[in-house]
Length: 104
Image (cartoon, rainbow, N blue to C red):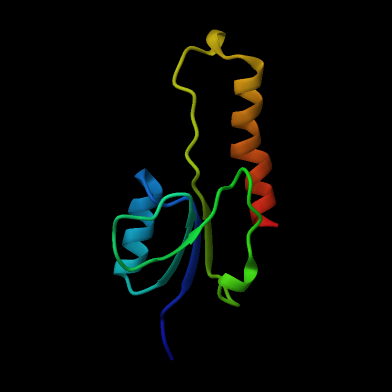
């Protein structure tokens, strides 16, 4: 019996997502990274995906998923009073609404 597990990461080419993907792959797991940018490290299966525009095509994913991480990584780095309503709504959409869509 194999201890190999399958993980799906939405985002995962940079930052925390890349560190997680790399670590999971180094542990011998099957790691699927759905992102706009091809990861620069080895050991993962990259599926081109833009969370804002694409639907997840399940035929590219394993039948059993042992873990899912949502890591698109949007953030507005400016004082709150300088946010426009549109910026706030777009960040909320990416970090909340689209996360729910991916999980479903």
